[in-house]
Amino acid sequence: MSQADLIRAFKLIAKHDDLADFVGPRPADLIAKTEKALGHKFPPQFREFVSRLGAGNFGSFEIYGVIDEDFLRSSIPDGVWLNLKERREYGLPDDLLIIAEVGNGDYYCIELRDGAEGRVISLIHG
Image (tube, rainbow, N blue to C red; front, side):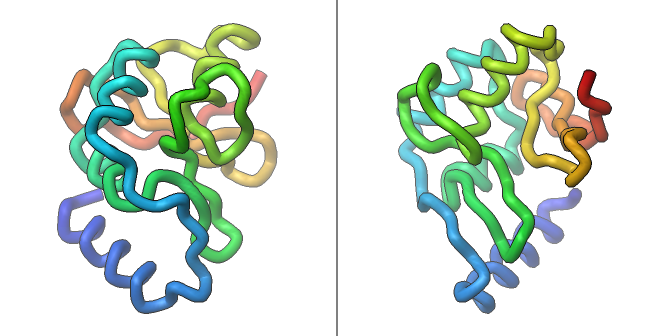
């Protein structure tokens, strides 16, 4: 996704706010704590997404992100909680960041490259 695509997505969400349900902007210090907990810096575009919207859904598509500092007792769409849980329980590689569910139990993930943009891939669960 290009920066222009991200801007178009933000405009589309703003135009159709009746379809949007996001937790809202997340502060920089919380984002830094989540990056530390995950052991990687977010890619710039994902960082911009969580800075502006946090986590939530647009229509029926849910995007996992940053909610709060409780990384151990949470639930979807808290992406930090989910990623740490998947690492513990299923050995999710720490250089992948789950950002959404495909719809069949598989996940969309971003390849983490410490602050650089990474590819979005589909991860077959299990």
